[in-house]
Length: 152
Image 1 (cartoon, rainbow, N blue to C red):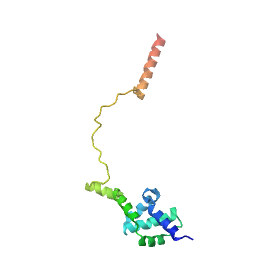
Image 2: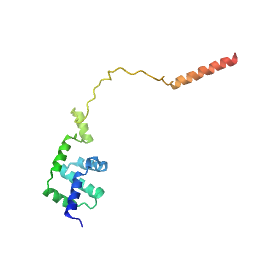
Image 3: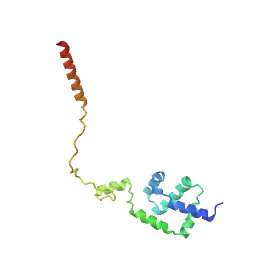
Image 4: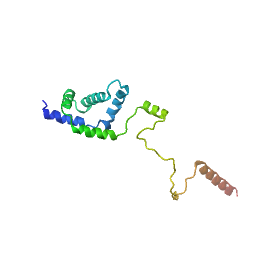
């Protein structure tokens, strides 16, 4: 039987679990977020709870977590939300296509100048390898020289 402290520890572990770096979760939640029929935050929380109880901790009580979360709003979430604000937004493929068609700048994309390196190039230290047709030409010349020497 689990104690209240055990549950609180599990709840805090759930809050600190990095769903953003879990590729298996990200691949599954992407299809859910495309439908957008419900509140996105509520849908995301339900997806996280489902995934966590099935993959990470099967003894995790999602209903007890929701009750605990409503009673205890921790400042840890506020700090995490601040970190989420700094992240560039995620777009679906269709949203990206629409932004490109409308000429809207996509946030988070680094602009690379269309300029070559203006520094002086380095000196070549090795000779260039002969091309295949150059190798064949050399072999033909060697065969011709050998044939001329044999006839002479």
